[in-house]
Length: 417
Image: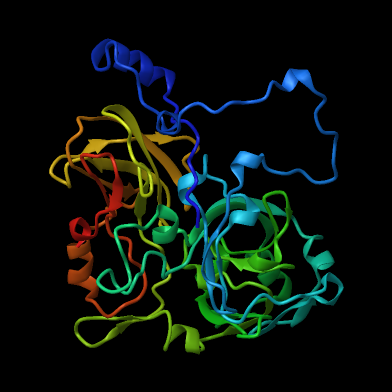
């Protein structure tokens, strides 16, 4: 993977005015473009440009790509977090995680069956679903194994980008129908406590979900970022469970069965469960806890000179809104509040930024997020004391980047554990 360089770091007018009078003085704020240098650009006024086309394209210098970690039918590809701006992930850069490859499903053949503990079992086509009141929601989906690398002592190096470290998260605007609407249509019986969501892929992905999530904010979605969901994201329709681990938002959903108890499928017993230090296991650990990640500066960037830079990153929580992000530039000794960039939405990635004067010495950059429930992103030691070392999921501990005196930025492995 060839690293990409992000857009220039931009400062708010408020910061520029404050910094010019109190901190920066006559100094010039450094941006990522300082590390690249100017490039000759042909004068666009001297020739006629291209005409209109049926499908837009990215600029030649903005060819972003997912990082394919495993190109197998049960593999994944990762979003280039360090190259994005704002909070919406372009649909073609949304991360992928599959268990049996990507099925090809004809729209005219698609049906969603809802049955079990209901008054009247029904099948819904996409046309049927679109007759119900539609809703749109901006939220993240994150793989519960995001950030797991074996863990850290085997197959991970300091030369790891934000994309390779935590790229199994993306944010989209999802459009569809509330699952509660469909449940009212079929008449869910009073004794129903769980429902089984089943996909149409070769793995026949299945997860048991508490019915309370259906009455809260669960959706059956068929739209993503203004168009039909991409095949990699579950075309023609998928379940969406905002804030919960990604595998529960079953793609290519074909069947929902209501029951009075969980179904205890492979994906919630053998997989997606958390062994604990006391030899028990934590099952149904649905919610993705508060987490943050600095995306600039991060590997493979190298700061070319001392001076003012802006630290940027993402924070998110499956419990609700992010209310605070703190950043440390000295390995967690001192912390400062970062500015949160609007919009700040529930169960959605939130941008944070903070000015930093690099004096040319070795620095350790960290961030930690606080959500509206009061949950603070833990250190790895705090996480390990509760979860132990046996799990492969829900690694939301504080990340660290090392800035070396020569400007190189590396993943701070020892600083994290």
